[in-house]
Image (tube, helix red, strand yellow):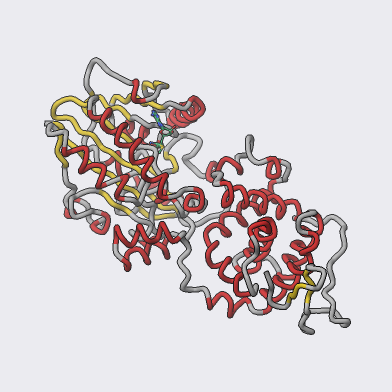
Length: 468
Ligand SMILES: C[S@@+](CC[C@H](N)C(=O)[O-])C[C@H]1O[C@@H](n2cnc3c(N)ncnc32)[C@H](O)[C@@H]1O
């Protein structure tokens, strides 16, 4: 491995051929010495967590959990935790571009054994390229970080040289990678196959934008949009204007007038039609956004959820909203009811590839094999869900995947051997403003590029089935 501005000496160690610009008078890069630096622990935690995400496929949410998260995260104060979140969210969003830039600064790729150096450089680079961290501070801290880690100590000068050069050539480097798709190749190929190149490009662009905050209101969407500052979307959700602060402090939260729910995620329950006075079951219910919608629409709701902790959260959410539902903790495959339901909602566990705007780790922790596996799980759950609905009733199947294997193809397969069920197409004319999210077969097929001018929405799929 040889690096630009770095050559391997006879001993096999790296030495730095410093350019005069940015170096010290004697041509040697200065490596700052060791006093503790503010924010260093946050950078160290970010690099560790980045490694867990991309090398060990660990989900980011769990590691950033305020109670059970990664130990390196839990020891940090609030400000540092915020910084770690910002570094990781941005690094994972732009990873292919950051890696392409680092590749330009290296003559040959870092060896597999230098992964921790790679993560350290990514953490340094993301601050300089996409976050408002002054270059000198990001470089100093990266060097300090390298010096603190026995695996990276010998690379401290190298990190210094690479990141300094990145700082000097930032604008050109960013320009040179502007066309790099920020997704793993396998996933982008699947998007192209499913949606065509143009639409896949639009999705790749849209998913780089962080998600807006959408709320579902019990009533009077226009009134709440005016009160909180926002707008009513064609889906019926209220999109809040960007703001700083805690959502829980906004008017209406305490008294349970609304709940946070992405505009796309709010669509499946709306597709159920008029459920007033009907018996409805929400089969994968927690944290309860769709249960709340069904209760708000006047249904008598049973919520089924297998995770105890998530069911607890659902109950807490319903309580704040002043709603009640019959909550059942079990695997839905074991759930049965003597009396069939009028409405069955199955919002199935999926690859979550539609949620990359909020969960940019998803594409780095999942692979094509997960999509196949999860499609199999969902098919099993859907086949069971169909047994719970009575004649004339409706089943809505939904998930937040962009992959047809977990959506259209699964539905076609299940309908093929369930002649008592048929698809109820959503007519584009039924939903002004949302035509782009209605598939030719009449399913709801949102991608992050739908309503892009208004800030996009999560990728989501929903299909309505009726029982004869
Ligand atoms: C996509 S989330 C559901 C989100 C929820 N519908 C909402 O709108 O708030 C999927 C949920 O299904 C639950 N789940 C997964 N497999 C299940 C099963 N076999 N039986 C019951 N619940 C299950 C998970 O614990 C998770 O809470």
